[in-house]
Image (cartoon, rainbow, N blue to C red; front, side, top):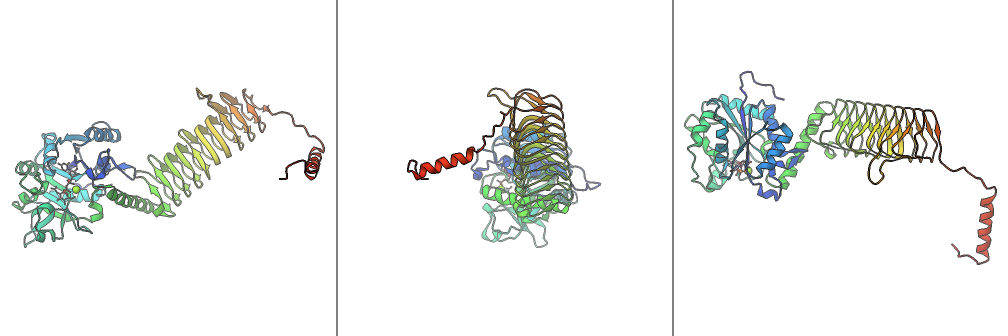
Length: 482
Ligand code: UD1
Ligand code: MG
């Protein structure tokens, strides 16, 4: 979050995102492609909001319905306003398409204009841009950048005194102009009154035949010149194709890691981990190599998430210990609970505090209560396992009869012997025992022992006699030599 400047009024934020995104070669709108788990356009919105932005208007055209639906789903219906730019006639035309939505706003309000395909702009920078506009006599500020490789960007043209005269687009620039070092990063803050007046004067008399938003800079020259703030190229560079997407994603992820490390999280090997945006991780948590944290996951203080864990929408409480290769989705892991190695928690799995599930245990719609254990090789589906119950190796809840799923209840303190099948619906009473190898088909009363295996017979000397008979047959040539 950015400390809000006392006198800074909340700017209106416009996000240009109507373009086709042709180079993505995708059926999906460009601004809906994700970086670190967040749609591209949401990065700009989040930066604008963190900078104290007021109304946010997305200028949409291509795939308007899909983009609007994604914005409504993420921010609530209508929270992000939408202006339609039906035909893409340039950035000046895009911004003009949003003016009707701002009809009731006063001329002195500041409008921040961002690009939906440049996700790494920091909130601090949006705030600086707003302040620079507020303090600029011409009422216009923009971000400039010096790219680290040749980019077809607009160039900033200044007079001898350094006053910004105009921006010349790459397509319209002479060889000499293309050698100018400062380029236009494509982010602006402008007083609404100037925006209204100056957009009306734009003409498409240029190489692309478009209405260039950048021509506003020449209008501001007559009022003393726009302010240009330099920003690092890495922060302002945009996404045109999937190569850019991967490069910007890597920068976004590095930034996420660094913020978390500065907040007290240890990453054993940050270059190998993937943590989506908006994932809270508590102080002194330890994240091992190759860990992937996605979606609405959260990690509590001092939790240890060891190598190779993949968590999607999982709430991990303080001091939990996820041993290597725990794969979990839509699950809750309680305080001090332990999982893995090689545990699979499927949707609606919940481990209360101090519960433990070990290797090759799969759970689904399972509530494992405080201190209960299933340490090896089990399938626990549609089940509640009471506090301190012990589920032995090889236990299977048979919850599906081919048509419907049924529930198993294992009450507190019960002991399920190894290799048992619990045929649902069924209840194992409090503190009851299920003998190893039992197929439970009837409820087991509290404190009882359930046993379904056949009685064992020992045939004395049988093995010795068997071996003798077999080897005699082999010597006689009667049997095939092994
Ligand atoms: C623009 C700037 C250029 C700057 C560069 C930085 C202009 C005229 N030029 O060029 O000076 O160096 O950005 O990246 O503004 N869009 C619409 N509707 C349209 C056209 C574009 O919504 O009709 C949106 C696009 O989806 C994109 C943004 O505006 O998000 C920028 O448009 P783009 O076509 O990429 O402009 P550039 O040619 O890159
Ligand atoms: Mg562009």
